[in-house]
Image (cartoon, rainbow, N blue to C red):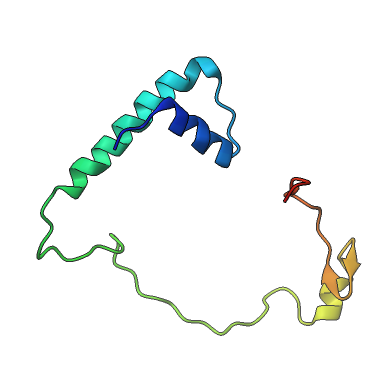
Length: 100
């Protein structure tokens, strides 16, 4: 797959990344290298190879889902600085663009 400077600029716009014009060539080269490496991996014959989901043997631990620090909702809400309709209000961390 060929990665062009226009592709990098388009992806940067979609992901809201600011890439300096002088760095576009370097980023294009690096992304091309990454994509080429992924293409090489897809050429490897993996027939009969068992899929690896997790490299560490772990058992799922099930426990009862119960609150550890708060016995009831009213006690929790006593410590909440700002609330609305029985929910905890938090500051906005993602601002949408006006055109969205």
